[in-house]
Image (cartoon, rainbow, N blue to C red):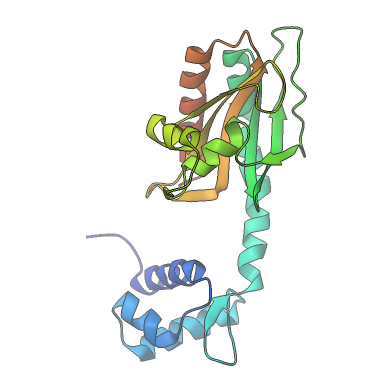
Length: 225
């Protein structure tokens, strides 16, 4: 028997359903999805409302509230603190610049970078760097963690199959990038995030792929997903 609180479990499941409903969800639909009666669903929503996690529109649709965004912002510093030592090890093992990238709209934004002591040539990849998700290993890794689409580039399909992306010369001439998406236990993306390395053409790609995938699994475990 699971050592969990049923009411809390239902509240978390309710938040999950609400977060996936782009245009909101009604209490009736929520009760149906959770397989509970409407009275219980109303109490769950009232509790979540009290904490600012959900809001109700005039039409009765339930949406995520501002407090949900607040928790998201608070998560990023915790992500950085857990990723930093892993990035240091990854940069050393791969002999390349290690990074963490998150999706922001249709672009990837680098939020962490750790330089390697190996080599003289450095890649111009810095915190705050942005690029289209369709270009570069970091963005392609993020796209590969989404549901397949009929018109997606072949490189994204291949990255999904391989579990990592490998690119050459996408963002800088001579640069080689390897990245892996950070996956949750149920394979849904967390903040649409990827971790990887980038270097000039002398990158040992086999070693880099192994190191990146291992680090991605470590990070997922450490942040409890």
